[in-house]
Image (tube, rainbow, N blue to C red; front, side, top):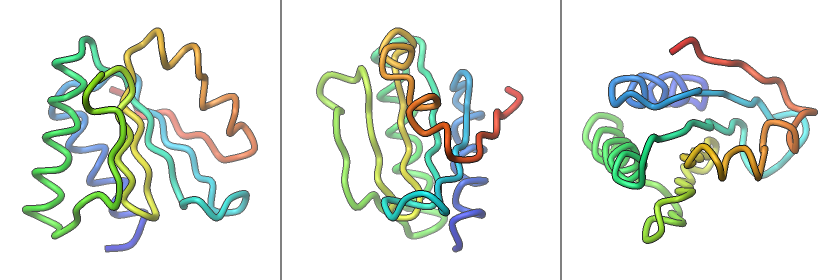
Length: 115
C-alpha cells in the first residue's frame, strides 16, 4: 500500500472513531522523516487511546501494517504512531495548540479534512 492510500485509510479509521480536526501535511519534498503527517485531536485521554488502538488494530488486520514505533501511550496526551512513510499524531487539543505542528511544518502542503 502506498503512502497516499495509507493516509486515506488512516483518515477513514479516525473519522469512524470521531477524531477531531484531522489535518494532513505532505512533507515529501521537505523532509526525509516521512511522506505525510496525519494530525488529529481527541476529546479525552480515553478517546486518544481509543483512536490509537483502533488505528493499530484495523491497519494490522486489513493492511498488515504495524507501527514501526509508538510514543506517548502511557500519558495519552500526544500519541505518535510511526508507520514509516506516514506518521500519525493524536493530541489533546491544548497540547496540539501548544506544539502547533501545522505551523512548525508550514513548508509542507496542508490539507484539512472536513469532519
